[in-house]
Amino acid sequence: MKIVLEHLTKKFISRRDKNEIVTAVNDFDFEIPDGKLVGLLGPSGCGKSTTLNLICGLETPTSGKIFFGDLDVTNLPPENRGVGMVFQNYALYPHLSVRDNILFPLQNLKGADKLSKEEMEKRAMEAARIVSIDELMARKPSELSGGQQQRVAIARALVKTPGVLLLDEPLSNLDARLRLQTREQIRRIQKETGITTIFVTHDQEEAMSISDLIIVMKSGILQQIGKPQEVYNDPVNLFVARFLGNPAINVFDGYIKDHKVYIGEDVVGERDAEDQEVSIGIRPEAFIPDEKGPFRCVFDRVETTGRDTSIVCHNEKCTSDEDVRAIVSADEKLNHEDGIIRFSLKPYKVHVFSKEDERVIR
Image (tube, rainbow, N blue to C red; front, top):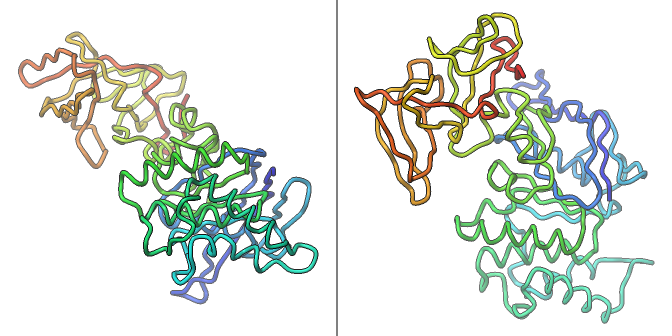
């Protein structure tokens, strides 16, 4: 099911000031292809969950339209949209077994949609099989792990054979290992079913690891949409560059002069742009230790984590919240005589942004 949002906007009256209008979603205009898993990504309060609620019909847009395929569903009730929704808190019925939790949406179907008991059982077992909980059908939610409960919630959403599956922060309540396992399960389930899926998260690693496309939001405004690695490698502005990446991108004050990009007195690249002050983002993996390299930092320490080594250093032009961090191979030989370490830089990992509007200067 293809999803199209046309100039979708949602405004609320502020709870603090009745005269203040808050724009939670601002002029969203994009298309989600059929059968793809899309990560809706951004910091808390950026409008991710509101966008999801608009798509499923729990919220009514202030303006704009929503299409499922060629069907305008903007004013269609949630129960008629063919959407499956999975929430952060699972919302399972504690007194019902896994089987009955999965069956519950089917038991409430009426009229022409009503199913026989045999068909309901068949669908419930198939949904349970897809999420690998078919051996747990007799248990109550309290007898399950967090990851298993989350899979029950997904099975309950799948049992209605929805055209669209919406997941709102589905992994937030899980520990680190379960998060990893469950996100891999979500990707497998989506591939197996082919259902168009929107996955809301503030965790960029989650979104990038399982999504076909990611949509990055800030303050209700769409910042960038694209394949995860493409967005990471080619951010359109400083916000996207800062938001994606772990460790975070290193950001420096710099300037362009005669088409050369400077941090302090060190030339770190070239841009065909007029002379101006700029912000320069350098990914941690961009650094290559080089005794004759053009970029200098004050060496602090080395942190080794098995395969990789993090070089922690300082530069007076760095504006990041943390020290400069460079990731290199653990086999790399480091030379930091007189406390200074020099680097060459991978050009495609160095991003230059306008000070005026923070947009990238390519």
